[in-house]
Length: 348
Image 1 (cartoon, rainbow, N blue to C red):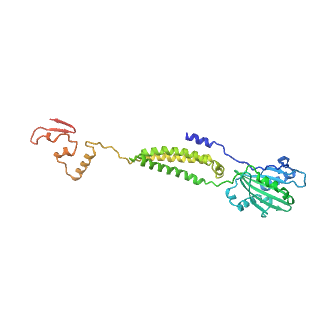
Image 2 (cartoon, helix red, strand yellow):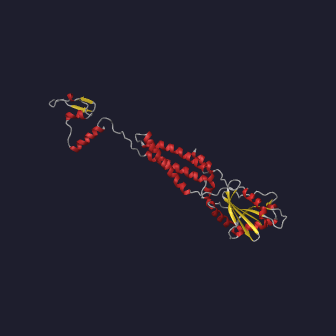
Image 3 (cartoon, rainbow, N blue to C red):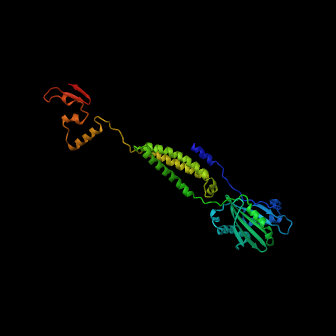
């Protein structure tokens, strides 16, 4: 049952995200309908950046300059450390658009918040008579880079429109959090081992108080196996929102889930096998009476070491082997002989 659930989880499709998209302002044109000048400009930026061009938006081609907005997709996520501070975000954005705007510092920059509540990095550069505005937006397992350009004298006229474009960016996600695979791969077996030891001790303390390790290990293993199944499911659904971070770290949600489950099953199996071979309970192998009883064997051992043999008239008192009562023993001068056996008397 557990394996069937795990295989189902592994077959669950991964959730991926495409590049962010710009909401086209009223009266502007998109993609093939965009102004030819804007399409040529976006194509040139594509070559300079070496990234995939995802979207082109432009103002109507009825002016001597076509304001252009282009969205590019970079096939790697934005790490959360890139947005740890405003300066770190600006550094990441500047490095992404340096081939278009140059290496000069921006005139203005900051962190903007979209309508979805996600932060993006924004900066503005002036190159001769043109204004460039760049946006770095995390978008799942990729990064979206938005470049907007217009004449410097028209920037105030387009300010509200450009701010609306940034705020309405669609497909933007939080930066990719760091995921430590090493901690999970080492920590999971240690957790299962700790549970096995704790359950075993609890069984000995509260259930198997005669210190029967076999029974304690069996009960603890059954309980721990159920905890492994429960913990695996909790881990799978609990890490669902960090699936992309897992992929970026070189694993997958299904792979990590399988590791947690298999390591738990191995610990449970080893616990059961070790407990089955180790038992400190009292072994009741000696009979309560007879020549092999514990009391007679102890007396025989003492006699052999001391060299003192019990007197014949004391054997009946010191051992239950001598079943003949003392008053029935023959007189030393009599010719009658008896063969004495445990619990039996014959006259010869």
